[in-house]
Length: 143
Image (cartoon, rainbow, N blue to C red; front, side):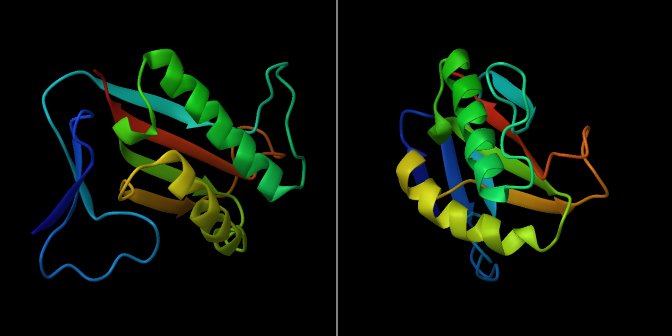
């Protein structure tokens, strides 16, 4: 089994078990989390600090705001992206998946050290408001 810790001090180790097919993007097949607190982080949306929707009809702007919001929540919990054990990403348009992959390839190497956490992608009918194009939720290990 290949394994590589995101950061030894985080307690999260990303795993790619022997025989598993190659990942189809920037993610690992599994994450092992050492004992401790787990944070189940609500799906983050493209909402600005003033409560307004950021990037109406602009997937890239929404992507950037979603990950900025997620980073803010993680920071508020006293952890970093390296403490994330898993993401779930929701899209309302399957055509946005390729845009997501491109933007993720640019962003993830700047917010993670080493490998990337598992990620499940789902395409759904809509999010809480019609103007939202994606939502990302996470599970993270506390300190």
